[in-house]
Length: 328
Length: 262
Image: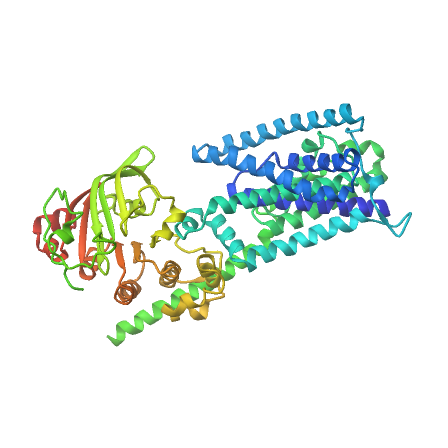
């Protein structure tokens, strides 16, 4: 039971972090980035290199992976997406470009994996760094990765709130996402802001990858395996909201782990390979029932409230004009 | 509004760029005798679609210059060209004596120019305070409201909840934050009630009187524009067909009936 709890919460938190990045880049470019998981797998291999090749604490890989995966995301945005957008490429072309980049990255990750194994004789396929983690309270205690993952997710939620709602930069980011052209006319350098957001998104994925390597098995193929899960998380929460992404990521992550565990109890171990069916079902049901995701329930209420306030304001103005007309 | 005394008229209007000054107009020049805005032989558009064909234009400090014309005549495109929002193919644009022909939009603000778009000119999901903070930084946002006390009760409401008139006022507050020397307004009274339109025009005139800046106003409502400007440009099919004194344009029956439907 404890293992399922750890599995579920670590996986759900990591998934939520990945979903935030996916949603953030989607809000900016309106393109679902199919290469997003490859940023995380790069982070996994950064962790492997730090821990097994350089023989330092795996936690030191967190900033390194943040920088490496962030730089990769920045390259993808600035070197591919932005160029295609300038050429007014269609959405399909952009999606295919992200898919192509994902395939390219899977190739690169395989080269990295083979390079590590051949050069340093370190297992780089289906590896896990769980044994290197610190366990708080000795054997049977709390693994540090569990605490760090939850802290990362909580810090991300709080940090994003502070950034987006308490700083001029964050407000500019929200403004630029809503209306890029207006932002530019007001002197906001949208290019810098969007580059920052892509870097942040890739960096967070890299950190999520490091944490994954300390609990789950890492392999280049994980990039493709995890893709449905992060898309499901983002869609269940609401693709256009970073907070919806956190909610969706946690829900899908937990349902994957807990749901699979329940199905094993009921049907046997043969169901394990069918685990990815759970996020697919979540994704399809959401698209059919609540296309805007769970966050739609909140935004719908907010939108209705805003419209009522606007109508009241316009009615007030009309009344004033009528009164002025009568007075005149 | 005092008339500038320009007397350029007739089609095609070819060399107005120096019109106001060459005719001995007393518009105060800056930076060594340059008009605030000076456009020469401007050809521009969107991608392959060319909208303006060799336009000359000038606007002076302390004056309101209006641009009028029918739909599709290129009024808004001329303003957008000034702000780097369309593709310039040839010609030059100078503002306050400096060449800004191909300066990126986000950098044009540094040249003392602000632009208020016709629609979608505020961030609807942001509160009024946040809208101002985006352009002014959080601490200067409140000061930007000095000119717009009527908006103070709504500071913490999302801009989407404002009425059309209030939204235009907020958009004006946002472009005023940087203390621009040149302000470009693209149909600021579009879709407003007559009373709100009057309020917006009065605000623009107040700003002009108070800050002595150059104002360029694109207006669909010709009467509004001619009544309130010092100089007017009439555009048709991407060409300037008149540039000068608004009264002269009003008295020119041919132009007024052919292009303004008056």
